Image (cartoon, rainbow, N blue to C red; front, side, top):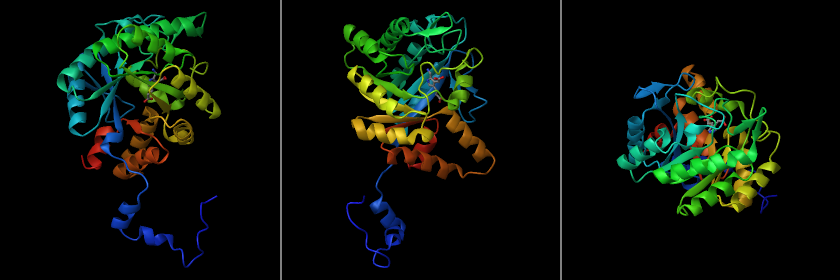
Length: 332
Ligand code: PBG
């Protein structure tokens, strides 16, 4: 029900409020600015400075040096933060040993970014999938992902990131109790000011396909992630996940993927009134890039319209591979 009864036509002519650019600007209900954007960076320990990702045209796997340059670019564009995702070579194992190497790729990249652009926020992905030989986010026993043994690995990984200088750790694994495990590890080690951005409502989605290519986990992934990531039939369950993560010490929450889940963004932001982020994931990016390359979608308008949709749905900000391009379109 509207709080008033609109007069009938011709007294009410909604088009009056759309009749020219100045009035449209004046009455716009929501705004998108570079301050709403987080730029996900895929980083690697390979030899190349920048290596293209085939399924994500315009996205590159970056060396630590290249990631530092990207962070400077982000800062200069007014983008508040970058989020790091690793593609590591070398041996992988069941417990993802590489995830807790204090001299590993992610700690290196954090330090390189903090040297080059100390003003920018650095967010890290806390999950084992890029480091395990089976491509899952947890430790595997008898073909199952075991929850509680995984928590110890995640807590140690988050500590390693915080120790290297990460401002925000973002558990994306969907184990039960991981926020509490991570929060306790941070508190116990003097990192009480490190933020936790919980991937609280993360769905088992086909839209992560191109990302798994980008980080090199698609070849190894056995089976699917449906025993820990959420079923896309559910939305009430997202509220339960968010409530748990907040009670365990999360500062902000995320809904992922993005555009197909705007209803969840709306419900979470309205119910909890905490900073709610959304992730326009690799598959959404790839889908748009393919249409743009074919001339079926106008590039600039498609980017701005999809990103603005997140703000309208109540998001505090958006993780998007389009971040630098969008910031430029927004006049940065
Ligand atoms: C898992 C993780 C994934 C993404 C970010 N962190 C993929 C997955 O759960 O398989 C996906 C990001 C994207 O698709 O852009 N640690």
